[in-house]
Figure 1 (cartoon, rainbow, N blue to C red):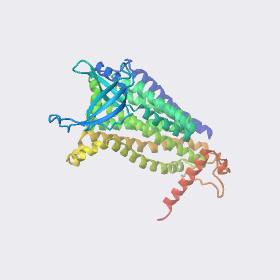
Figure 2: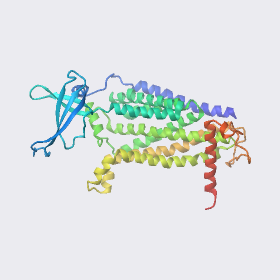
Figure 3: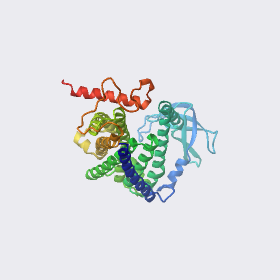
Figure 4: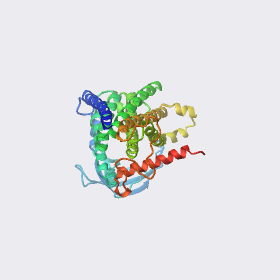
Length: 438
């Protein structure tokens, strides 16, 4: 039956090959012709390039006469800042800001300074932002260390996959959209490229991974179709997002905001889909390795026990993720005195609802489809007869399941074999609990 496995895997690999060829062709066709992003105002870009670091030396509060036209209380902060770089490095400048609404600062803080022409003809510095890069680098280092310590070589491959995903987004997806290409087409091509590269890099070219790749692709196609229909049907224009409007203004209006909403949905959906499909495919193969005599229907049914739990938890995760991202907006709506129907009907909230529900539908469909594919590939790996009736083929009493782990003690098993044995025991308990009378 090994030949059946090879044929099934070869069939799925052929599908992946077609996807790969289409992805490469799509990237070649959509690759941005302009090496630089399109911008409407080069002066605005230069303004950000002139930012320099400065260190706060002293912060002093004082009160001046309130300005009734501005509506401030008159409480001010006088901040002495030493410039750390640029032509004025080493100089100490004084920055005056209103205390009300200004972030808390302390001596030793590093800030980003910008300058503008003062009425007297001299440049005047002001605090444009905080310098966050050192903190972000420490956080990134902590994340990398945690991944490597816990996941080791597997974690290293996942980090390389993460870097490649970021490279595809930054070097292809964003520049191609700015170059005028269709945002959904660019996002779909980029998402498939990320999926193929990262899944095979992280998990290896294995039947389990191939089943997950094909399952993710199918679910992603359904997600794109549903998203396109409901974004158009719901009259989601994309103008509800200030960031999208500013981005459109920056490229002289040459940006499809409605398409940008669908593009964001595609990329966000992939982040959940590949996690669900690889977990589901891994579950199927772990169950099969534990008991190779399980038939297709039994293998599918047992794996779906885990799949249903995964669906329930990840759908809730999607909702919480979007709710967390829009928490300030929800607070604002709650203070506006609007009816619930008016709040839901607003585009800014309707857009999040479409993203959440469409992403959840793609997730729900991905689980049974990937489970079926993985079960089809895995079913011929055992030495026992198939199970045409769908009845679980339980191992003989007082013996371990057949396979590589047969007859081995827990100490002699590798990590995957122990995990397979644990999954099988868990699923047996779940089925017994569900079949026992209440």
